[in-house]
Image 1 (cartoon, one colour):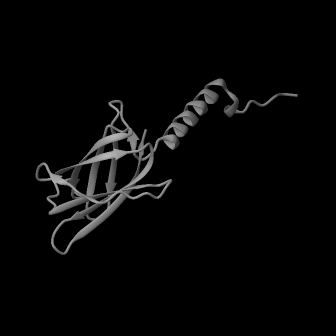
Image 2 (cartoon, one colour; image 1 turned 90 degrees about the horizontal axis):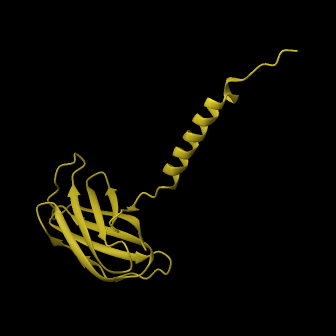
Image 3 (tube, one colour; image 1 turned 90 degrees about the vertical axis):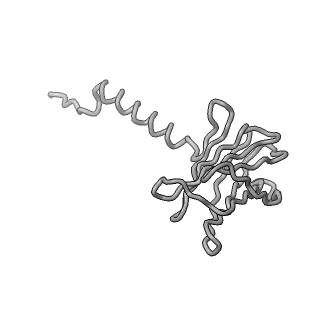
Length: 144
C-alpha cells in the first residue's frame, strides 16, 4: 500500500506554522498601551473628532509627567481650548482630582501628577475644542 504524504506534514510547513503562531501570540499579548524602553508609557487614544498621543513618564510608581499631543482625525494638529486629565485606579476605584493640563504649544499639553501607585489606571482626557464642542476619551495605562 502506498502512503500518501500530506503537504501539511512537511518540516517546512511545520516551521512556517510555528512562526505564524509565534507572531500571532506576540500580537495578542501586546497591550494597546505599552511601556517603552526608556521606562515611559505611551498610548494612542481616538474618537470620531480627535486623537491624542499620550506619554506617561516615567511609567512607574511615583511622580509622573503626562505629555499629550492632540491631532484631528486627518492627523493635523488640533488646537484645543483646554484639556483636563482624570486618573482612576481600576482595582481600588480611587479617583484622583481632575487636573487641568498646561499648554506647551498649538497641539501639545502636559500635566504633572504628584503620586501614582503601581497598577492599572484609567486615564481620561476631557478635550474642549470650542465653547460648544467637547470630547472625552479614556484608556487604561499600566504603572509599574
